Length: 339
Length: 284
Image 1 (cartoon, each protein chain N blue to C red):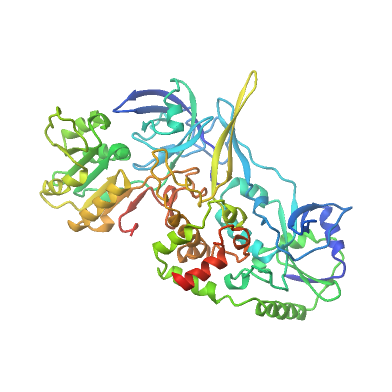
Image 2: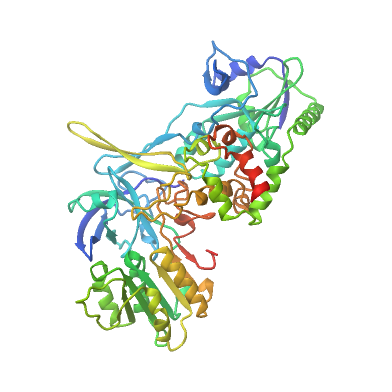
């Protein structure tokens, strides 16, 4: 780990723009935040705000081609993205990428994109509205193993820059930076600790996780809860760790040849037909079972054992987007009160 | 890295069996073994010769997509293999219209097949329903070939009616060596039941079949509708067969077969990767 002092953030942005396509979270006119590509000419200020969509689309594309069939054989269609940097990505989303890295470790399409990416994390020093990252060990400070470079805001628009690995060190090579005294790391810890204290009480969530894992949540509770699930896939689309997908074939027929492309696209385990078979046998025909499985996947001990952490990173996007009021805070509160 | 890419296969032949079901014979177009150095289009991408009884493959019908099917005969040295396929949804309906000689795709073998080491030389009761007999064909053949003097194998096969019965030729062949009970859910008034045939479900015959064993059955293999398998497993436990000696082949919709797409979940497991064969103990 190397620690530096950065006086002017734009120097780092310009330096990285010379090597990478740079994406950064930008607030739009409608006050929504989203990932947008930056140019040398146009650099938005860095903001520690959660974008509406996570960064998962950069690696696990919303839809992408897997292969083509030319009538004789099948050919892989791997993506070939240019090197890119996600500049100022927050700890919850970084934790989700680290989780997806494990899940997709042997998937060539995910890895083709992931290998091209430099992750520059940004510490949160103020809690966000729906977030509860400290409860699920995903923030507010960037976890070292999840980013190549970490940025921590200091006073007077100064920054602490931490390079966590060789990839980070290589990326800042040639940039004139002052080495920092280690006591800045202590200051960072204190600031992050202070930030953690400012998060609202999360006991509903921790207690509900225990109830969930102790088998204290009844089938009838899930059925009742599922009445409010519209099966809209808002939560699974925005959840940075959700990874279910479907596949489809697209035939392109021109005068003299026919090419068939097979694609994969984001799917949702909350759709009624997600597990329905050709025979119409459907193991998860009941909405309650689907909702239960979704939350079990996020907080169940069985999955914790596999990934060494919960499947939820505490970003709160499901709460924000759910039209039926069964996002994470609502569900966990109801588990505590009624299950 | 996991491969999402099928190997090209030729639809060699098919013969009808029962109602809207066919035995398909396929042949891998390229049977050279895959290697890291040689990954061109003339090389198979999958390790076909490693196929074990109860494993499955993904059949790619170009323009439609992929679905999971089990081998009734695993790939031989010439790359030929067979599968019993029932016409059910869009993919199989399209498959049934394709002529011999068409090029399709296949990936596999996938999953955990029947636990051969736990089955070997045991007294085994097999309960299968409908198409559920397909993943057992290859295994029953090899069990019969290696049957010892003290070992007994009994099969209960259930079908909805006489027309829906599958694998008649195979069952007639097996009948020379092992005891087989056939159950039919529905029979019409004119129909006369033949020997070892009864009206009802396989569950109705479990007690009779278990009584056939000179030394008690110690292992059970189940494949068919999940509700039938679950009831059968409970009944077998009640009859003294240990839950870790009862094996069920579970069917689920699949899009990838490599543990990624999520469709085939069964609690915290994926049927494609952790199954399709599970012990009853694992499913509790």
